[in-house]
Image (cartoon, rainbow, N blue to C red; front, side, top):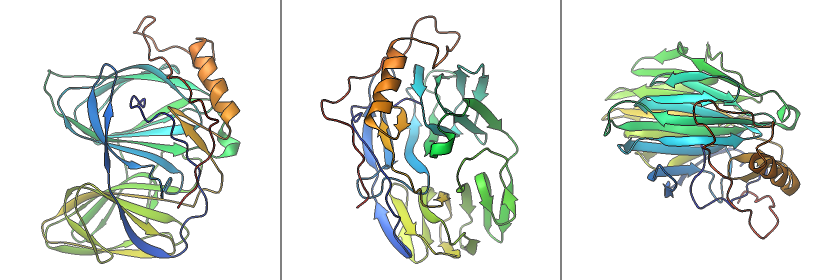
Length: 317
């Protein structure tokens, strides 16, 4: 997915995570995406005071978008895209030769590494609702030059407790381990808590965690949360108490605090202004770095202008 919004000058860096457990709500902001798609997403990462959760550096939610998706070829570097559809099918094609349909309950993971390009086009009749999550993880320094790749996982592991079922997208939850490739310690899970249920969720105390509610309402470690805001939970939690009167579906994100500064601009995650400028120049030059996505001719999304100021990291807090 490309960032088509005007907020292309945003730069992000991760500094030390909050030490110890907290419960802090960060509201989603509506971001209109321009270009040929013209829709609105709800963005909960990055936040000015919370640029990352572990290596998770970007989170957009699409809520019953009936205009469909038509995202022409566009580039990425230095990140993994994690696509988790909730409703609607999307045709994904990329420069490593992938040509697949992205469907609900299937995890789609693309590693950009040194450079990749891809397109996403809605399938189905006009007016078919689309809903889902698009997340990015920042690659650590040693993985920035890896070869681009794409994975689709259709049989994801489950972790269960009375009244609670978790689908593990990436990483490990209890004894359920995803086969998805990661480059730093991470957790991503989609959980459903039944109405009237209470449960205890095991956590890695070395991770920081956050929760995003998709449907219903849930009390998380004593904090009531409904759809919309991201609940940041800090570190040093070994478990998470959950309860819901009406039932809830929510996403749990976690990861070892990311120890490197990053610079994020448009669809690129790098370490310096110069690295971002080079990636933009390479995309605009139509060179070999980002390959070619078949089926679109010469049509693709051009890079926006760089800001006049030098891109610098923005620190947490």
